[in-house]
Figure (cartoon, rainbow, N blue to C red):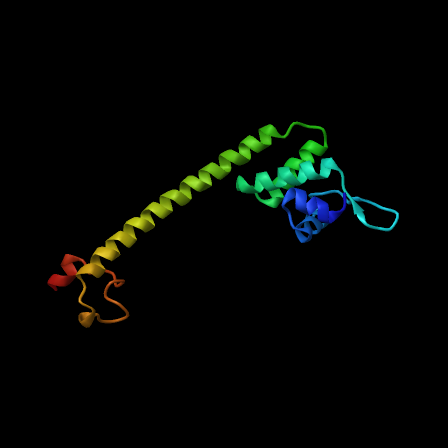
Length: 138
């Protein structure tokens, strides 16, 4: 099949297919006598794998590693498991950070609800750090 058909069947734009070829995720395709790229089902399967791996949060570099392991005839699932665990740890960390950001925003929203806009001093009283009670007593 030609690149347009491959793009249609895989949902991957032709520009992306060419980029993945140039970056080593896909082998250089066979060519027709007239010079058109000629793809087979194996390439379509590989494209679908790459897309699915991306939706799992894997980077192209990580996907390239997985494909290289597989292309060498080795089972890549142990490596994939390690990558998944690393990504889960990163997602958990981001969730903790987002939870803290949500708490901060909620606190600021409460401050904003109690702030008279006419009494707003400095850059914005809502976003100014609160002084400690000791500082207020001085």
